[in-house]
Length: 632
Image (tube, rainbow, N blue to C red; front, side, top):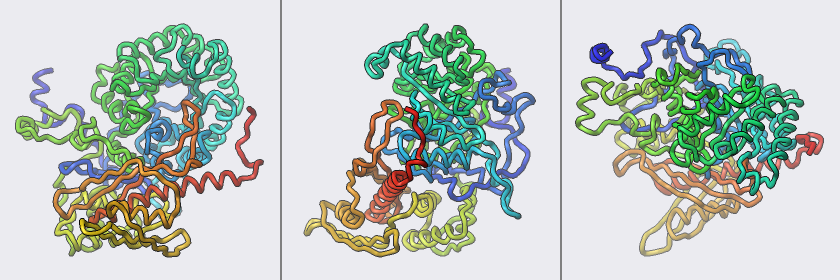
């Protein structure tokens, strides 16, 4: 073994073998967005290229098994349950619009996740509509396109679409109304089972909790849903014998998946692995259900606990893109999937159906739409994940990449810099710019390209050389934004030590009418924001404001991110506590002028608020007969 490794060609140990050349689906504009991962890396959005390569077919017996809710025919196959759109969106400031959720859901299907938990339908009318849209558009096979349309544009894998609900009829009704339109719908219902939760939160006895769980699982099945997942919340701190009992009872009532959450991230990997093994050994009827894991990251152990659970017998793993989620987040999809891929021999031959080459594209899309940017040293998808600055490391990399890289960047959709020869400037034409976008992994429509090219020319006139990072920042700001209700026409600001800072802003409203306002402030950005508020007149509180330079140099493009909270009437229900909370909304903008960049970001967040408020208003105006029924 040692001699074979030493004589192996210079490639990372986890590198995928060279595949046969075929065509991958090209993403439509609305379903993808990425930002530069680092100066030394470029995103290869493999799904956008005309002559890309499919991964080699799995060995015989290793293909994705046919989906059956309560069993997996291949004991080594692990289902990936992605909860980015539900648990991930509970991160402060991570609110996405319905359109953005649909975009992310399409990309999750391309990534190959088995189950998409699309939301918590009972939390708000907007969430119910978003889950319903995902169920209809992502949860069903794509209809044949018009003549001449590339069939490869369709998403080849149809995932299960899941909606979360608490153990009550109203929640379950809402979840079923949202997901029932999918080819494979699932209801995920939960109730707390730890002593501290039952005593202080639910104020119910263990016997009452068992009765509720049993009744609500049966109720979900009675609606026609044949795929029901049950979670005993805070299972990691629950009494073992009580867990075996309640899990056995919900299996009798029709639960097909038993999700075991480490809700507060309390368990160590050894503990959690033993918990899964004990549940597998002691729960009556467990052979008729799939065991799942859901690990929070409060102690930084979510990925380790998830892998320990899989090794102990769990065959569904609940994860999020970039590990986003409440508090310290969840187990990270990219970390779990690549760990299984790299260390399969130590995980008893486990494998997933994930196409890992879509990981980077998906990660960047979630960052943009959620507003949550990953830290540079984040495993797998961080800006520094494949960067080597140490001289010793660089020397080893030049001799053999496997010396310091256990994963090939190509395996997650990254390619190294300087592979493409086009350098853009103010004299570059449409063809050169469009070719560069394709090289970076983008295919956008003619109208969108013309809008982008106008912004490109404005920047190119001021910069000698337009970098890939500049292009990606402009794409983010011009193309990948929420539905435009208010748009920026002009902004003029003055500031300094000799007078008050002032700003004049001209906006174009939803009816196309131009409105102008002037204001003073403590600085140019404050003055501009107050002018915007005079026009739009939505009560908001600025919670976060940050600005970064896309590249080095005084002429760099600035990207701004803001998080705002709106009117107290813009509320939603928390999935775990059931309490109403005031949603927060993030926005991003880019420009060479920091005031313009700041105003664009603020408008992006305000447009999200307007869209959400509009959905709430529209739902409240629906006749009573059209509302989701409630039997509680």
